[in-house]
Amino acid sequence: MENRSAVDGRAVDLAVGWFRDIWAALAEDRGEVPLPSDLLALLVCTLQEGGQTWIAADGRSTVGLQELIWRGQTPGVASGDRDASAKVSSKQSQKSLDDLSDWVFTTTEDGLAAFYRATKQIGTCSSFEQLSLTLEQALTLFLAQVSGKACEGKLELKVRKANSPKAKIGDVVAIPTSNGAFYAAIVISENRFGTALGVFLDPHLQADINLVRSERRLPYAVYTGQAAVKSSRWPLIGHRPDWLNLFPAEPEIFHSKRDVLNATNPQIGPHGSAETPAGKLRSLSADEAAGVRLTSGLYQQLFLESFLENQLPLLVQGS
Image (cartoon, one colour):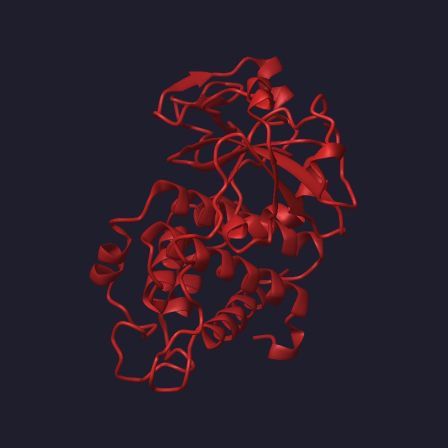
């Protein structure tokens, strides 16, 4: 096995950012500070379900990663604390996930896929050992950040106050990106997929609604959460309900026939399918699939906030 010094700090930072967004999503959905076991249960569930799509495609197994997450004691947590330990039974894990909204699962799964793709792009986690060590180190760092004194399990992270800002339909937010620019996006809808955003394509150096050119926009909505708005990381810069008619009221998500889990699914059309928030599927035409970039492999629609910030510059390319 490769030693710990072989782990790239950039990949660890990406994973910590992913964990931070999951934690915020859990807090937002439940209205209370999550337990470390909630995070661990959600990670294992994601590896069991969506992880098969990206790891299995590379001929790897998720079993080792699931065992990695559960094994050993979490730093800064009392060894006898069953709720805050990494050793949580599968029955307890399932119970802790039963009341979560769909958008938390979908954005967590998509964040995992985005993390995996990002590490491949920067040339890290090229082996299963590196991937395992990266997630292990990131999990150790993150849980140490959200834990208080050792053996007391007091959490530093606080749930947002009730009067924290929340974007409403028609509000425009400024999303800061990894290249230092802002992209404006309008809130289209709130549904089981999350918060739907219509993204305008032009980057700006200032978070100013007067700079937005509404005629240039991403050809499909993206879904994310509200944690970045509530923390003011994504500032609200205006309210333009007149721009809502530029987007569908209830944006669909799209399923590619290229995905491992969809290749043999008869419900997914030969060019892919669109799914409404109500769960209705329809087959896409070849032109529709090309229009949302399903055929090129560049399509991505469900994001945790930090991954949307990192991926937006790439997402708008070619639009």
